[in-house]
Length: 312
Image 1 (spheres, rainbow, N blue to C red):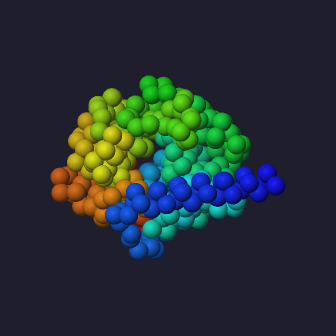
Image 2 (spheres, one colour):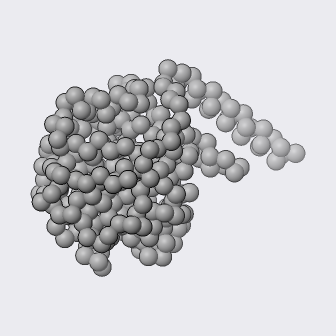
Image 3 (cartoon, rainbow, N blue to C red):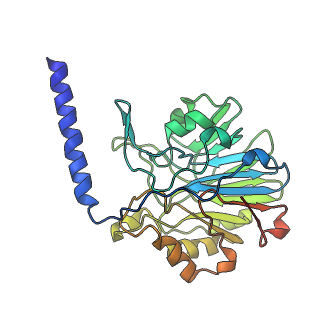
C-alpha cells in the first residue's frame, strides 16, 4: 500500500511542477519543428586541417589535424530528467543533424558544466568509448566515469593539461553556475581553449557577461560563443546577450566568431531567430561564421582562417 502512496505523491509533484513550468513559459516562443538542411560527414574528413560543425545548442564537432573533439554533446530530441523510461525536459525544435554513432571515433569530449542541456548521459553513452578522453570541471568527473572513457580529467579555471597526442586544454573562468540538481554545491563550470599544433580554439560553453581577456594569451583563431537564453532580463545573470557576446569575443583576440547556444531548445523568452539577428547587427560580419545546424566549415591552415570552405 505504501508503494502506491509514494507513486501517487511523486505523480502529484510532477503534475504540479509541470503546471508551474507551463505557467512560467506561457509567453515563450513555440517554434515549429525543423529538419536541418545540412548533414556533416566526418567519416570523409581528412587528417590535415581544421573541420568545425555546429550540431545545435553548445554541441560543436571539430577535428584538429586528425584529432576529433566534441563539446557538450547533446544529440537526442529531449534533455532533462530521465524517469520511468521517459525524459522530462525541453525538446529540440531543430533535429540533430547527425546520428550519435556518426560523430566517432571521438578522441576528446569537453564538458563545460553539469546542466542537463550540456551534460547529457544518453549522448555520452553513444559517443564515449575506451579511446575517448573526457575533460570536465571539478566535482563532475564521476558523471563522466559512468561511461567508462579512456581517462577523465577534472580541471578548474586556470588549470591546463597536455594529452598523450599533444593536444593542450586550458580551463577558462566564465560567469555561470554548475549545479546539476539544487542540492549540488561543489560542481564547477568553465570554458576551454584547445590547442593542437598551429590551431587554437576557444569554447566558452555557457556564460553571462564577463571579462575574457585571459583567453588572448592563447592566441585563438576561433571563439565559439553563446548568444541565446538571455530573456527575461534576470536571465542575463547566467547568459550573455548577443551584444555582450561580441564584446567578449573582441576581448579574446580571436579572428572568427562561431555562434552557439541558440535556436535549438526554447530555454527563454526571446524569439528563436532574434539572437543571431542581434549579433549580426553589431558584429563585423566578415568575422562571423553564421553556421546552420550541421553545416561544416573547413580551413586547411590558420593562414586561410578568413576564407573557410563550406562543406555539405
